[in-house]
Image 1: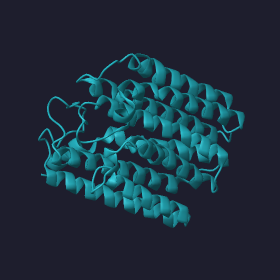
Image 2: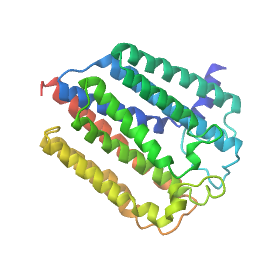
Image 3: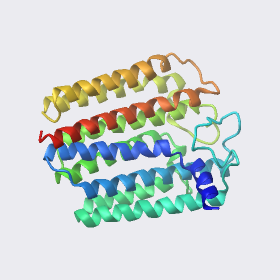
Image 4: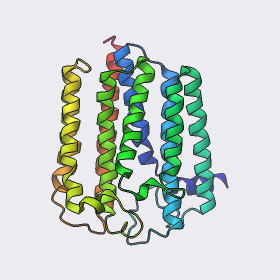
Length: 309
Protein backbone atom coordinates (compact mmCIF):
# COMPACT_ATOMS: atom_id res chain seq x y z
CA UNK A 1 0.00 0.00 0.00
CA UNK A 2 2.75 2.46 0.95
CA UNK A 3 4.78 1.42 -2.08
CA UNK A 4 1.81 2.21 -4.31
CA UNK A 5 1.36 5.59 -2.63
CA UNK A 6 5.02 6.53 -3.11
CA UNK A 7 4.77 5.50 -6.75
CA UNK A 8 1.77 7.78 -7.19
CA UNK A 9 3.37 10.56 -5.15
CA UNK A 10 6.44 10.57 -7.37
CA UNK A 11 4.31 11.45 -10.39
CA UNK A 12 3.33 14.86 -8.94
CA UNK A 13 6.66 15.88 -7.39
CA UNK A 14 8.75 16.66 -10.48
CA UNK A 15 11.89 15.81 -8.52
CA UNK A 16 14.26 16.83 -11.31
CA UNK A 17 13.29 20.50 -10.90
CA UNK A 18 13.43 20.23 -7.11
CA UNK A 19 17.18 20.36 -7.55
CA UNK A 20 16.80 23.75 -9.24
CA UNK A 21 16.83 25.09 -5.66
CA UNK A 22 18.83 22.35 -3.99
CA UNK A 23 21.85 22.58 -6.27
CA UNK A 24 22.32 26.38 -6.04
CA UNK A 25 22.19 25.94 -2.26
CA UNK A 26 24.80 23.19 -2.47
CA UNK A 27 27.22 25.05 -4.73
CA UNK A 28 26.60 28.38 -2.98
CA UNK A 29 27.39 26.78 0.37
CA UNK A 30 30.51 25.08 -0.96
CA UNK A 31 31.57 28.39 -2.50
CA UNK A 32 31.16 30.06 0.89
CA UNK A 33 33.13 27.26 2.54
CA UNK A 34 35.85 27.72 -0.09
CA UNK A 35 35.98 31.46 0.66
CA UNK A 36 36.11 30.98 4.43
CA UNK A 37 38.28 27.86 4.44
CA UNK A 38 35.83 25.98 6.64
CA UNK A 39 32.75 23.89 5.86
CA UNK A 40 29.77 24.15 8.22
CA UNK A 41 28.20 20.86 7.22
CA UNK A 42 24.96 20.79 9.25
CA UNK A 43 23.64 24.21 8.16
CA UNK A 44 24.40 23.30 4.54
CA UNK A 45 22.71 19.90 4.84
CA UNK A 46 19.54 21.21 6.50
CA UNK A 47 19.34 24.19 4.14
CA UNK A 48 19.69 21.87 1.14
CA UNK A 49 16.83 19.70 2.41
CA UNK A 50 14.69 22.76 3.11
CA UNK A 51 15.28 24.38 -0.29
CA UNK A 52 14.75 21.15 -2.19
CA UNK A 53 11.55 20.42 -0.27
CA UNK A 54 10.09 23.90 -0.76
CA UNK A 55 10.69 23.50 -4.50
CA UNK A 56 8.76 20.24 -4.41
CA UNK A 57 5.95 22.09 -2.58
CA UNK A 58 5.84 24.63 -5.42
CA UNK A 59 5.86 21.84 -8.02
CA UNK A 60 2.98 19.99 -6.38
CA UNK A 61 1.05 23.25 -5.96
CA UNK A 62 1.45 23.80 -9.69
CA UNK A 63 0.22 20.27 -10.41
CA UNK A 64 -2.84 20.87 -8.22
CA UNK A 65 -3.63 24.16 -9.92
CA UNK A 66 -3.28 22.64 -13.40
CA UNK A 67 -5.67 19.86 -12.40
CA UNK A 68 -8.28 22.07 -10.73
CA UNK A 69 -8.23 24.63 -13.53
CA UNK A 70 -8.21 21.94 -16.25
CA UNK A 71 -5.19 23.60 -17.88
CA UNK A 72 -3.69 20.38 -19.22
CA UNK A 73 -4.77 17.76 -21.74
CA UNK A 74 -3.05 15.19 -23.94
CA UNK A 75 -1.98 17.86 -26.41
CA UNK A 76 0.04 19.67 -23.70
CA UNK A 77 1.59 16.70 -21.90
CA UNK A 78 5.39 16.67 -21.83
CA UNK A 79 5.51 13.10 -20.48
CA UNK A 80 8.50 13.96 -18.33
CA UNK A 81 8.97 11.39 -15.60
CA UNK A 82 7.67 12.45 -12.20
CA UNK A 83 5.27 15.12 -13.44
CA UNK A 84 1.69 15.55 -14.69
CA UNK A 85 0.55 12.63 -12.52
CA UNK A 86 -2.71 14.32 -11.55
CA UNK A 87 -3.86 15.29 -15.02
CA UNK A 88 -2.82 11.90 -16.45
CA UNK A 89 -4.75 10.07 -13.73
CA UNK A 90 -1.67 8.44 -12.20
CA UNK A 91 -2.27 10.09 -8.81
CA UNK A 92 -5.28 11.43 -6.93
CA UNK A 93 -5.90 14.92 -5.60
CA UNK A 94 -5.65 13.48 -2.08
CA UNK A 95 -2.22 12.07 -2.92
CA UNK A 96 -1.07 15.50 -4.09
CA UNK A 97 -2.28 17.29 -0.97
CA UNK A 98 -0.56 14.72 1.26
CA UNK A 99 2.71 15.16 -0.65
CA UNK A 100 2.42 18.95 -0.47
CA UNK A 101 1.77 18.90 3.28
CA UNK A 102 4.54 16.38 3.94
CA UNK A 103 7.20 18.30 2.07
CA UNK A 104 6.03 21.59 3.55
CA UNK A 105 6.56 20.15 7.04
CA UNK A 106 9.95 18.71 6.05
CA UNK A 107 11.02 22.02 4.51
CA UNK A 108 9.83 24.04 7.50
CA UNK A 109 11.44 21.72 10.03
CA UNK A 110 14.77 21.71 8.19
CA UNK A 111 14.63 25.49 7.84
CA UNK A 112 14.03 25.90 11.55
CA UNK A 113 17.06 23.70 12.22
CA UNK A 114 19.16 26.12 10.15
CA UNK A 115 17.81 29.04 12.20
CA UNK A 116 18.56 27.23 15.47
CA UNK A 117 22.09 26.38 14.33
CA UNK A 118 22.90 29.88 13.10
CA UNK A 119 20.64 32.03 15.31
CA UNK A 120 20.18 34.32 12.32
CA UNK A 121 17.10 36.51 11.99
CA UNK A 122 17.98 37.09 8.34
CA UNK A 123 17.75 33.37 7.65
CA UNK A 124 14.43 33.18 9.52
CA UNK A 125 12.99 36.11 7.57
CA UNK A 126 14.08 34.72 4.21
CA UNK A 127 12.78 31.29 5.18
CA UNK A 128 9.31 32.69 5.86
CA UNK A 129 9.36 34.51 2.52
CA UNK A 130 10.46 31.32 0.78
CA UNK A 131 7.68 29.29 2.41
CA UNK A 132 5.05 31.82 1.35
CA UNK A 133 6.47 31.96 -2.17
CA UNK A 134 6.40 28.17 -2.54
CA UNK A 135 2.71 27.97 -1.67
CA UNK A 136 1.50 31.15 -3.40
CA UNK A 137 3.42 30.25 -6.56
CA UNK A 138 0.34 28.45 -7.88
CA UNK A 139 -2.26 28.41 -5.10
CA UNK A 140 -4.36 31.05 -3.38
CA UNK A 141 -6.52 33.87 -4.74
CA UNK A 142 -3.62 35.64 -6.49
CA UNK A 143 -0.90 33.10 -7.42
CA UNK A 144 2.01 34.92 -8.99
CA UNK A 145 2.47 32.23 -11.63
CA UNK A 146 -0.38 33.84 -13.59
CA UNK A 147 1.42 37.17 -13.87
CA UNK A 148 4.43 38.33 -15.95
CA UNK A 149 6.53 38.60 -12.78
CA UNK A 150 6.68 34.83 -12.32
CA UNK A 151 10.04 34.39 -14.04
CA UNK A 152 11.71 37.21 -12.12
CA UNK A 153 10.32 36.15 -8.72
CA UNK A 154 11.29 32.52 -9.22
CA UNK A 155 14.75 33.43 -10.47
CA UNK A 156 15.36 35.79 -7.58
CA UNK A 157 14.17 33.43 -4.84
CA UNK A 158 14.86 29.94 -6.19
CA UNK A 159 18.24 30.59 -7.77
CA UNK A 160 19.55 33.87 -6.36
CA UNK A 161 18.48 34.18 -2.74
CA UNK A 162 18.93 30.47 -2.00
CA UNK A 163 22.53 30.55 -3.24
CA UNK A 164 23.24 33.89 -1.57
CA UNK A 165 21.94 32.75 1.83
CA UNK A 166 23.87 29.48 1.55
CA UNK A 167 27.12 31.38 0.97
CA UNK A 168 26.25 33.75 3.81
CA UNK A 169 25.74 30.82 6.20
CA UNK A 170 29.28 29.62 5.53
CA UNK A 171 31.09 32.97 5.50
CA UNK A 172 29.12 34.58 8.33
CA UNK A 173 28.66 37.95 6.63
CA UNK A 174 27.52 39.49 3.36
CA UNK A 175 30.19 39.54 0.66
CA UNK A 176 30.47 40.97 -2.84
CA UNK A 177 31.72 37.60 -4.03
CA UNK A 178 28.65 35.84 -2.65
CA UNK A 179 26.35 38.34 -4.34
CA UNK A 180 28.08 38.00 -7.71
CA UNK A 181 28.01 34.23 -7.46
CA UNK A 182 24.28 34.24 -6.65
CA UNK A 183 23.55 36.08 -9.91
CA UNK A 184 24.66 33.00 -11.87
CA UNK A 185 22.04 30.51 -10.56
CA UNK A 186 19.47 33.33 -10.48
CA UNK A 187 19.79 33.90 -14.23
CA UNK A 188 19.93 30.17 -14.92
CA UNK A 189 16.62 29.78 -13.08
CA UNK A 190 15.17 32.61 -15.16
CA UNK A 191 16.33 30.68 -18.25
CA UNK A 192 14.43 27.62 -17.01
CA UNK A 193 11.23 29.52 -16.22
CA UNK A 194 11.41 31.51 -19.44
CA UNK A 195 11.80 28.39 -21.58
CA UNK A 196 8.80 26.76 -19.91
CA UNK A 197 6.64 29.87 -20.27
CA UNK A 198 7.66 30.38 -23.89
CA UNK A 199 6.92 26.74 -24.68
CA UNK A 200 3.48 27.16 -23.06
CA UNK A 201 2.78 30.37 -25.00
CA UNK A 202 -0.45 29.14 -26.60
CA UNK A 203 -1.54 26.83 -23.79
CA UNK A 204 -1.38 29.62 -21.19
CA UNK A 205 -3.55 32.03 -23.15
CA UNK A 206 -6.76 32.69 -21.25
CA UNK A 207 -5.47 31.34 -17.94
CA UNK A 208 -2.17 33.13 -17.38
CA UNK A 209 -0.46 36.28 -18.59
CA UNK A 210 3.23 35.40 -18.63
CA UNK A 211 6.13 37.53 -19.82
CA UNK A 212 6.08 36.03 -23.35
CA UNK A 213 2.49 37.24 -23.72
CA UNK A 214 3.58 40.77 -22.81
CA UNK A 215 6.73 41.08 -24.91
CA UNK A 216 5.93 38.56 -27.65
CA UNK A 217 7.04 35.03 -28.46
CA UNK A 218 10.25 35.87 -30.33
CA UNK A 219 11.25 38.58 -27.86
CA UNK A 220 10.89 36.08 -25.00
CA UNK A 221 13.65 34.09 -26.72
CA UNK A 222 15.80 37.09 -27.63
CA UNK A 223 15.69 38.58 -24.11
CA UNK A 224 17.85 35.68 -22.91
CA UNK A 225 20.83 37.19 -24.75
CA UNK A 226 21.35 40.24 -22.47
CA UNK A 227 20.57 38.05 -19.46
CA UNK A 228 23.30 35.64 -20.56
CA UNK A 229 25.74 38.51 -21.04
CA UNK A 230 25.09 39.69 -17.48
CA UNK A 231 25.74 36.16 -16.24
CA UNK A 232 29.09 35.95 -18.04
CA UNK A 233 30.13 39.44 -16.89
CA UNK A 234 29.38 38.56 -13.26
CA UNK A 235 31.37 35.34 -13.57
CA UNK A 236 34.41 37.09 -15.02
CA UNK A 237 34.08 39.87 -12.42
CA UNK A 238 34.15 37.22 -9.71
CA UNK A 239 37.51 36.06 -11.04
CA UNK A 240 38.86 39.62 -11.27
CA UNK A 241 37.92 40.15 -7.60
CA UNK A 242 39.86 37.03 -6.64
CA UNK A 243 36.75 35.06 -5.68
CA UNK A 244 37.59 32.15 -7.98
CA UNK A 245 40.74 30.82 -9.64
CA UNK A 246 41.45 31.14 -13.35
CA UNK A 247 40.67 27.50 -13.96
CA UNK A 248 37.37 27.78 -12.09
CA UNK A 249 36.51 30.72 -14.32
CA UNK A 250 37.48 28.67 -17.37
CA UNK A 251 35.35 25.75 -16.18
CA UNK A 252 32.35 28.04 -15.83
CA UNK A 253 32.85 29.55 -19.28
CA UNK A 254 33.12 26.09 -20.86
CA UNK A 255 29.88 25.07 -19.12
CA UNK A 256 28.14 28.26 -20.30
CA UNK A 257 29.20 27.52 -23.86
CA UNK A 258 28.53 23.78 -23.91
CA UNK A 259 25.25 23.58 -21.98
CA UNK A 260 24.04 27.14 -22.34
CA UNK A 261 24.82 27.79 -25.99
CA UNK A 262 25.75 24.71 -28.02
CA UNK A 263 23.28 22.24 -26.51
CA UNK A 264 20.48 24.74 -26.03
CA UNK A 265 20.37 28.35 -27.17
CA UNK A 266 22.08 27.94 -30.56
CA UNK A 267 19.06 26.08 -31.94
CA UNK A 268 16.48 27.45 -29.49
CA UNK A 269 17.06 30.93 -30.92
CA UNK A 270 15.98 29.74 -34.38
CA UNK A 271 12.44 28.83 -33.28
CA UNK A 272 9.96 31.18 -34.96
CA UNK A 273 6.69 29.98 -33.44
CA UNK A 274 5.46 27.66 -30.73
CA UNK A 275 4.72 24.01 -31.58
CA UNK A 276 3.10 21.19 -29.54
CA UNK A 277 6.26 19.31 -28.49
CA UNK A 278 8.34 22.42 -27.77
CA UNK A 279 8.17 22.05 -23.99
CA UNK A 280 9.09 18.39 -24.15
CA UNK A 281 12.11 19.09 -26.34
CA UNK A 282 13.46 22.30 -24.82
CA UNK A 283 12.32 22.32 -21.19
CA UNK A 284 15.16 20.05 -19.97
CA UNK A 285 17.95 22.04 -21.70
CA UNK A 286 18.34 24.92 -19.19
CA UNK A 287 17.86 22.40 -16.39
CA UNK A 288 20.93 20.58 -17.68
CA UNK A 289 22.81 23.88 -17.52
CA UNK A 290 21.76 24.31 -13.87
CA UNK A 291 22.82 20.76 -13.00
CA UNK A 292 26.19 20.89 -14.72
CA UNK A 293 27.25 24.30 -13.40
CA UNK A 294 26.31 23.72 -9.77
CA UNK A 295 27.59 20.15 -9.56
CA UNK A 296 30.89 20.72 -11.35
CA UNK A 297 31.73 24.03 -9.67
CA UNK A 298 30.56 22.68 -6.33
CA UNK A 299 32.96 19.77 -6.73
CA UNK A 300 35.81 22.15 -7.56
CA UNK A 301 35.10 24.28 -4.48
CA UNK A 302 35.06 21.16 -2.32
CA UNK A 303 38.33 19.86 -3.79
CA UNK A 304 40.03 23.20 -3.17
CA UNK A 305 38.70 23.25 0.38
CA UNK A 306 40.00 19.74 1.02
CA UNK A 307 43.36 20.73 -0.44
CA UNK A 308 43.53 23.70 1.92
CA UNK A 309 43.23 26.14 -1.01
